[in-house]
Length: 287
Image (cartoon, rainbow, N blue to C red):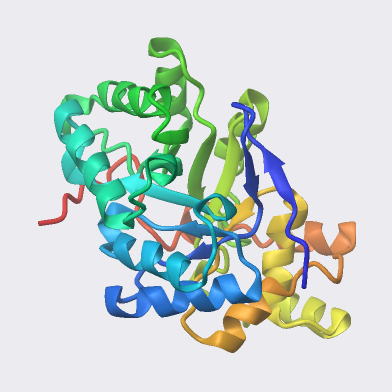
């Protein structure tokens, strides 16, 4: 079994660098997918209130026969609950859906603000963050962080609150390296987590990626995931196909050369490479 490295967070916790993502996995299929991933060796599951499958994550962990403390669980606050009282109720619901009833198991390892929503709530994500500080203070969120925060959003938190986010989960892949946000994180002790790590598959038929894959004897997806690992980001690829879940895990038995890493980084297209929305303008609040 591959050994997944851990990364130290700024609050003393440790996070597995490779996780299993459940974005867009049907709630009815989530428990089985999570169990498959855990059986393979994953010990980090990334979910969100918006995904609607937190209950399946908890069930999958129980079905795998693992103790709560053996799995690192991340969830994220839904966009409709940024006001502090709503955030507290939503967080309680997250813990309820995960379904770990023993008091010592009733926590998440990491809880994030999913989107900053600077055009909603009067632009106030600071009071939301202070609600998350409360979840950390009472131990029900072992670490807290943000997702899709741009540098000005992070600077505002630094100016107006006491807690530096442990992580910032942002879109990163070879077509959109998002380097300014990554660099701010590195400078301030905020670990970068990369969502859409293979650009929803768009990078996999790139000639540069294919050439490195052929030279290393690995698949294009494994090459790109390995690029993330060597750059120090946390990733959580998603699949419901057992063989692909296994393949995504098998990225620790080879290494890319510095030239290969640079060649993949140079594929950056800037903002044109985004696969998801721009955090400065994204304002969706689910029904």
